[in-house]
Length: 625
Image 1 (cartoon, rainbow, N blue to C red):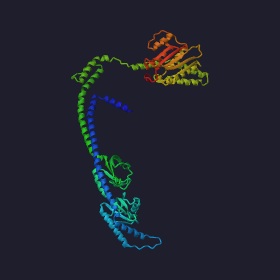
Image 2 (image 1 turned 60 degrees about the horizontal axis):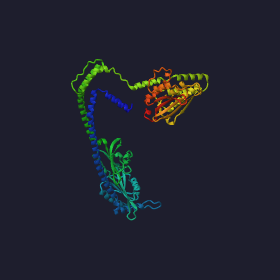
Image 3 (image 1 turned 180 degrees about the horizontal axis):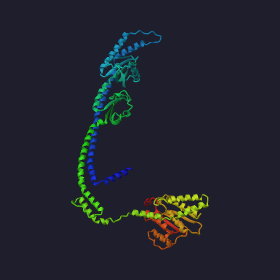
Image 4 (image 1 turned 180 degrees about the vertical axis):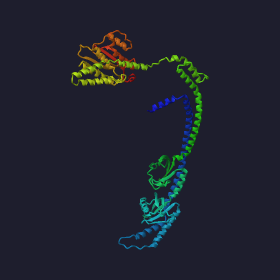
């Protein structure tokens, strides 16, 4: 069942409802729709206002947060540049490099004895500098200084030194070697401290270069304390009621409120990383929850700060207002329903009484009267009802006949008048040929006859085209030539523009049949039948011409009068029944296309008879009927 049928069915049920229910529905619609519309507009506007306020407020917090983070990282990079300006650090690194270069085990050489005093002096000098650097900026978790042989020097009291310091150095050395002496910011990673506790830090590393040779003499690595960022992020999460995290350009997480995301690739949410521009907001489904995503990008580090606020959390106030609005709406509807019931009952009470009186009239009692108490619409209706009862006995005898049904009945009556003798004679001919000749003639006749039956037995009101009509005539004449070998010669002259013109079925065959059965001249060996199609200014003309016996002038005139609508059924001429097939064809044309079209009979130019069918031109309005 399609949509139109559903709508039609629903409308039918609505119109069939009692008046009382219709009034109830109207009252409820008048009250409910405005309330629902106002509630929806209020909820939408309030929700949009909350969203704009949230985006504006959160964006300001995020911008301030990223500015503080950029300042903090810039300070860490300045700290990493301190060894470039501290001669003591460089001198101690050079000494450390020389010391370990001398004590490297060389194959075949005598080992150099350890000089612990010199080594202790180097360690104290570098650790003193590291301790000084640690005191410059709060949040520098651990500062490591390495010589070129990977020997690390550090000073800390927090126990945050990396347990896998050698592996970290090799990784830092490989990455810093490609930075050209510039500070390199590395993303957050998890590591195990010497106290066997898991910690998180992001690191600034830089090569330490010799002032004279500009060759690397060591490396400084500053492990930042992630808690400096964490404190600010936690405070921002409390204000936004969301979850925040910072990612670098490669998708590595610098910090996340959810610790499970720390130091992992945020591959499960690629749509968050592919946002262009310095900042913005959008909605996205993250971990199966629809959330408002706000982001801003640091111009210095290209880090992105994301804040994810659950949509339900952001809209909880508007949802509460929506629920209160709906509750008030339902209470109002309940009161309106009670009032509507009372009003509809008062309005429909006289109508129900009139319905009872109508049922009494249906049973044959015409003495009832509707009491008219008021002059409103109900009173006027009652007055009209009383007057109608007086005339009802006469009105029930009127009969309404539709012209369309009459035309349909005439069409079927004309169809039943088509001469069936041809069918019976053909069947008899096929039987005789099948008995006398054991050849392919019977099969050919059956094939042609099957085509005739398929075309002619269908709905006579069905549409066809000129090409099919001509083909049907060919089959008909071919079948007659089986019965009377080479007795009939059919010739057709029709241009291609007329072949696909729509027309009624079985227009030409009855005319050809009439020409053969009423005009066959036994003195001629072959009877010729020509079908020619041309046109006048307003009509397409189909000429059916034979060279048979012809038709008396009186008969032609009588047929033309009958074609024009004159009743000639009272004619006493013996040939009065001969033109019934032609009249049927003409009546069908007039019934379908109108009285402008039809048929006429004329004397052939070489003797015989010419029948002209006047049909609509292809492409006209009448042709499309």
